[in-house]
Image (cartoon, rainbow, N blue to C red; front, top):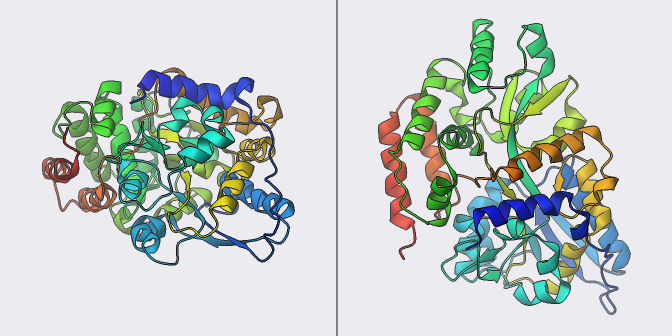
Length: 431
């Protein structure tokens, strides 16, 4: 396993160090490839930083591969999450797809033989030298599907982390300063509730709700706690102080009106839109929203890291994976190369993404510079703690359904934690 220190220090270096810049690669000319099609799936919104970068990569690919067309299909995160195994076991698999990283997702598919072993391509094309150790953690999986070592089954080309997005105009309207402590954040939320405003945008039917709870737990945790939970380097007790604080505080926030009781059935898209429309003054979510907010939000907004916590959710970005049943694997490898070129990486950075191989001097947008600076703050303090649904297969669905019960008050924190413990222990690998 890679150590946490190596993961994070190297990730920071990948973002900001000119020494790791990738040589621009336009993809190879495909002789005799007339009539071929690269079937590509990803779930990035077209106005997100990644969506804009991948759209440009498609243009670059078709320009450098005469006669080859890219057949792109936009898929929802939930859609791929739930159907990947079935699709990849059929004849409908794409040549290249974006897939979630971690033991329960890419790790599981690699263990089942559904993903192409990219190790040979990684060595031949030099990807092992172009991606830092921190970013590589979620690219490699052992025979048990555990991340951090073994064969390469995916390639990430951006990094990501969570932060607090806030509506500066609403904060100013009600005389609320930017919170620098958790106490100040709760005071701000109390003020909004007193004005009849639910402060936190939330989505109980998808990932946001469980990420609020995990962040609360992380504020009472340390690196060894994370490595025990995510990498099985110790025993995880869901009734420990950190998990108990997370569950009890989350349930309390619902009772106090910080989180709407009606949000149990809301999806992530609607949570983001509620912030964009100025209905919710605060959203805790990931850098994947940054580019979209930059283009769609019409009011003054800002971000800050979750206060009073050294840890927050984050990692290398989602993976490009090549299904074992892909018909045009060489074309898929060429497309990955293009997304890793300086041209595409610089575009990603200036659109509000966190690139892993950009030229720092080429990132000119002030908000983009701030995004990368906050990421570096996290990296410098070893603060990336992955995501709560990663450890075991099926845990995402368990977290969604159980956290919904906390929102509706149909389950108490102690029972919630016991349900998580049972699901986790059932599938955690034994040594």
